[in-house]
Image 1 (tube, each protein chain N blue to C red):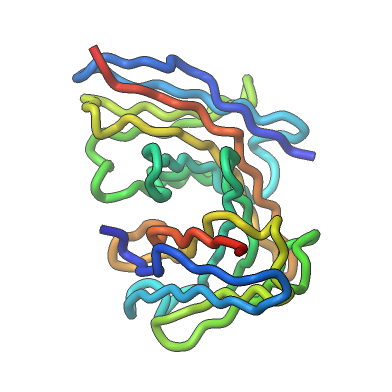
Image 2 (cartoon, each protein chain N blue to C red):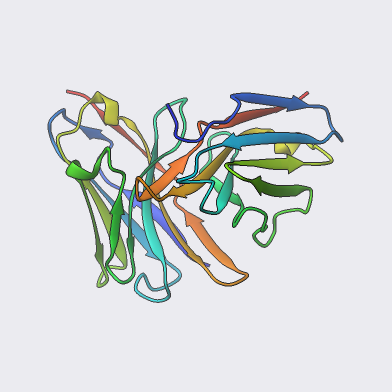
Length: 121
Length: 110
């Protein structure tokens, strides 16, 4: 069973870069046709998709965040990461990493437990 | 302001059937599959429905999904107390070239 775990600083200062890592266990990050994604959720609010990277290396980003987001994969560590630059208080949220792949009649969909990142000085 | 529109709340009594709507546009629901997620309090979202009406393994058949035009709905029959959660619809948006979510519907079991 694939499991995902987010890690990174819980507090980031305004204008700095938020960096999070998602460690994938129970399977290889580079096998299969997975999309590895980041989603965030401000307290008491809905879900916002940040972006994703495919096992082929193709990336897609939320247009509203694209200029500030980098998503990359480290196959040697079985991890993928998120970097969000020039953060403000509006970037305070629980950040989730997720992985999914779809077959003709099957789906694998995994989420981390989420990690709270607060942007404050 | 979410790209997909959901009612903020819904409610029902145990055993009832409730439906949650999700409205979009031609660039998302109108041309792509709809997905539904269930988020229990304090937990990560869980995929509840994919490709409009397909249930992942382990999801009870009390949950069903449908889509018509630029709208979709999630139905829950035989409502149970453990169904009390937030429900989100999602779809790929061809114009934005990304995933979009609804604002979420908080389901209360009375």
